Amino acid sequence: MPVLGPAIDESGAKALMDNGQFRDAALAYQRLARKNGDQRARYQLLSADAWREEGDFNSVQTTLQTIERSGLSSNQSTQFDLLDAEILLDEGDAEGALNLLVADPQKLPPELASAYFELRAQAFEKKADFASAAAERAALNALLDPVERAANEHDLRALLDKLSN
Image 1 (tube, helix red, strand yellow):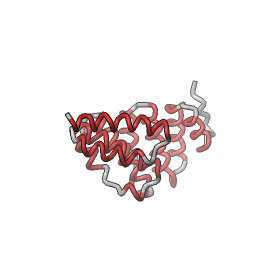
Image 2 (cartoon, rainbow, N blue to C red; image 1 turned 120 degrees about the vertical axis):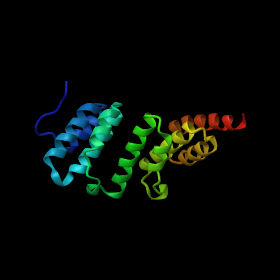
Image 3 (cartoon, rainbow, N blue to C red; image 1 turned 90 degrees about the vertical axis):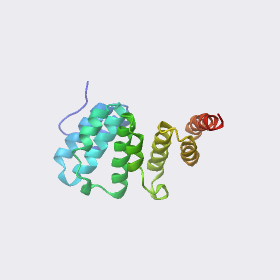
Image 4 (tube, rainbow, N blue to C red; image 1 turned 90 degrees about the horizontal axis):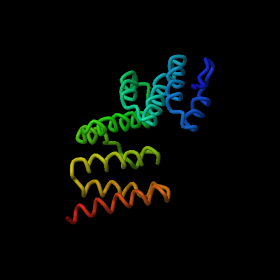
């Protein structure tokens, strides 16, 4: 049952995200976007991210199409591109995803940089460019916690195996 009331605020929407109620969080952020014109683009982006967490890429795409990019900061614009690239990868368009993934990762906060390297690795792997995919995974490794690092290293070894075959 959704916990959305008419007075939900940003902390309530974030709590929904933290509790894994991604659909409810997406809807809460959409309500906030409608109520807060000066923060509209930011809340729509948060909604799109919640839809991504929910696994609903159609809603991600629909939400992204409503965002006025001029209302986004540089990092938010990069997050927009990451979401858009993930949609393209989901649709099998690795080249289109790579065309969006052109930010300077050195200038990104760690959470965006890790998504950047992960998506680039996936895109290169879909293109059967295993050397480039391995390079992206190697760059990603330094940004991950030990559990994520182990999974990434497993994927990296699999890519290196493909190179040696």
